Structure formats: C-alpha cells, structure tokens
Image 1: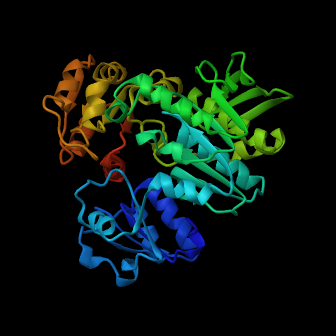
Image 2 (image 1 turned 90 degrees about the vertical axis):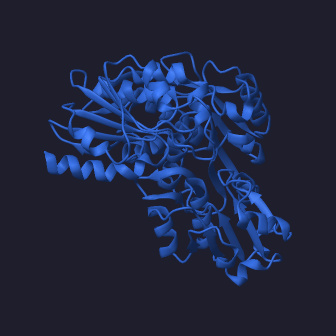
Length: 448
C-alpha cells in the first residue's frame, strides 16, 4: 500500500488511545481525517481542534461524502468496535481498504527503523521513555504511544520519518503486523486469555514476534526467549544496581555490555519503573545513543497520565490515579504506595476491566486487592464483551480478605470515598473510571 496516494483516512473508534495517535499523525501529514466514536472525550476534543471531523452516533449518513470514495480513502478500525457496527459494515461491503490499527501502524513504520516495545506490562512506560530519549537526542523519530506523555501532553511525539517508536500490542496477535529492527519484550504474564485460550499460546505469539526482529532483541532477564537481557541486580547484559531512593526519586548505576554509568536518576515511583527505564536505555543505547545523553533525558522524563499520577499530594491526603488492570500491575502500584507511604492507611478504588479477565484471574485479583486497607469495587467495565454469567464484582469482592470492603455505583462513589478516613486513595482501572478522577479530586479538595 502506498500511503502517499491516500487523501482521506476514516477511523471507526477514533477516540481510542492508540487510534487517536495515528489520527493525529495523519492530520499532521496533511491528510483529511474523520471518524466515529461512542462518546466525546478530551482526546476527541483535541482531534477536533486540529481539524478532524468526528461524530458520536453510529450512522452512515453522518459520514462526509469525501470519505465515501474508496479509491483515495482508507478506513482504520479498532477491535473494540462490535462486528455489527453499521459504519464498519458499510465500508467492508463497499470495497474500501479496511485495516486494523496494528495493520496501518505496520504500513506507516515499514520503511522506517522501527523500535518496538512488547510485553504484557511496561509497554507504555518503556516506549514513552524511549520516545522522550530519542526526542532529547534530536533523532529524526516519531513515537506512537499508548498513553499521554506528561512531557508533551500527547500520545504522539512528532520528529521525523527515519525512526519510529511503537508499542507492539499482543492483543489479538496484532504485533505480528510490525517489522521491528530493534525490539524489547518486557514481560509475558498470562493475559488476553479470551483471545489466546492458554498462556502457552500467548508465549508462542511472543516467540513469533521475536523471530520478526531483524537486528537486536532485548528481553527481560529470565524470559525463555533468546536475546540481550535487561534486569535489576542480576546478571543481565543491561543491569541496574546500587539502587536507592532519594527524595522520592530512584538513583541507580547501570552496567551495559561495554560500559558503566553511575547515578542515573528517574523521577518515577516504583522499582518496576527502574526496570522500564533500563529497558528504554538498552534500546536507545542499541540504536546508538550515548549513555550520557540517555541519563540526561531520563532525568527530565515527567511520566505518563494515569500511570501513578498524583492528583492530590499533601501531607494529610494523597490521591493517585493509575491504569492498572491486571493483578501484576495492581501489585506494582501497591508496592510503590507502601514503599512511599509505609505507615498510612490506603483505600483502593478499582473498576475491573473485562468479564473474561476477571474470570481468568479472579484469585490473583483478590490477592492483590486484599493488600489495601480498604477497598471499593465498581461494576466490571465490559469494553468489547458481553456479560458472563456469575462473573461480577460481588463475586470478586467475596474473595477479597480485607475487612473494610464494599461495592459502589459510580453515582455513589464520591460519597463512599468521603466516608473513608484513609490518607492515601488509589483509583485504578482501564475502563471509564479515569473520567471520574477529576470529580473525586474536586470533591476531596472541597472536603479538605
């Protein structure tokens, strides 16, 4: 496919975090961009402000005539859109080039030096750190991110077409559409079992991805895939050691296959973020960026929205917002909270994401959520799924061992949070709970 011949790009599900980065990219490259999404958000408002035409009703009649020419229009859709979506059906029945998000990302990046970050956890943070390093190093690179970078207030870092940074998403095997030159695999924990069926199938998919890497593969020490390794305090090719915390920041030394650097600093909480930083360092260094330039970029990295984002940070009250939606990720958040605030009472507010994930990991979720002093559960966010009989938040709650626990509706959530005397409140989940955080913040600010 020659993207130069395409004038119009239509997105079915334009407001998704990955979709919107691609829409922004095409708009920045002079294409006409339009699309559908279910609800208006800050992301869709931004796209509209740069000229994208967006509507919020699944209605073929709302699609502009210029996007109904199948010769110069391509259609990009997200797997989150249901199969019976009338706009998607229209494009499929009228012989348009219809591509998944991963397929168009493969087309955009196939003629670039592609740096791809894969893994069930750590993708977004690692790729965003890597994109920031390349930007700070004045590399001719564009980065497509799975989160909003605090440094750029965007999920797209524009900077040229020689190099691309992408998240290689294992969901529905979409990362196999990429052609990476340098890649990293951060983790291979069981997830997306609604797609893969068994963990072994997920691992096989990661191995297929590893085989697509043309130059250098970097993997977390201990994973059963051949490549250069990264890790913490272990015999890895890229190894962080002498790790300490000073004023809420991590400082550590790094050994690479050829040299060492001391006193690297990153202003992110949690040891898992040291791992993410080392993974990004390994990729940037493999591409040819010096350790000194990398260390300077790490120091100025501000983080990602909804990744341990402080919404309130005072002596008596802390509100943290995080995208965690898998037991391993929740454990990483709790580890960070307990490390920063070891003697304070912690309230967790969690919205489970997907019925299938809740079913497949219910015991692991119960174990990680039991680490909170208090817990409020919202109903399961369905995303692309229909309900599964017997799988609900009440079932999960009954397995949680902390004494102070309850189910809440969204309508009563603020009221229930205000009844707690916890000094640390952690809001977690990948559904629409993120849209409630500002309301929670404002209510807590008024109350205190």
